[in-house]
Length: 246
Image (spheres, rainbow, N blue to C red):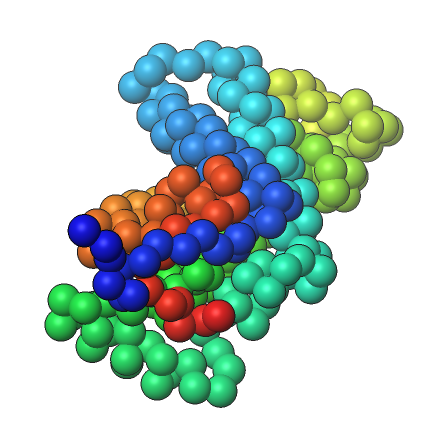
């Protein structure tokens, strides 16, 4: 039995290789950051030593560097990539966007969802939330890498702040309190405190948005098809109706 025109499947090349690499590097680095972060949040319960906690922070910051560099690369690629990788296809703006969002929501609720080769209008809202939270986590994380480990890019400045008189800032270590002026260290920790709070609650928000994103991918895959998950491996979507963004 032949298919009707609306049931004919067609393959669309959507996600280019750099976009797919970004996605999976970001997913793995964020997962690693979450795992190590949860362990650090429960350091007392787990009985971590001071040295063990510093080592975990070093792993956490190293993963943060990977995430930050990968994020910078994605921002650059948003100017250079194919049509689906560019800013205008990722962010919730542009002529007709809000009308497209209403149309998409109406069609989805009616049981006849629209198909998109790239990101659908609802997904573009999730993307901007994830990107903003990743930028916030990167900014606050780099500050904390400086205050906690004296690592780049700000570690030298913080080490100079807390170093005792006559001590080379390069020799300041989180495990060597005798290299620090305690009054300056206390002042630095007071400066650090609100940054920690922002980093912590942004972490909770990011985890919630990621879980919502994963749930939305599953629901969209079921209701719309389009091989969303496999497309992030192959770059190709398989659709049975003409997509709205081609």
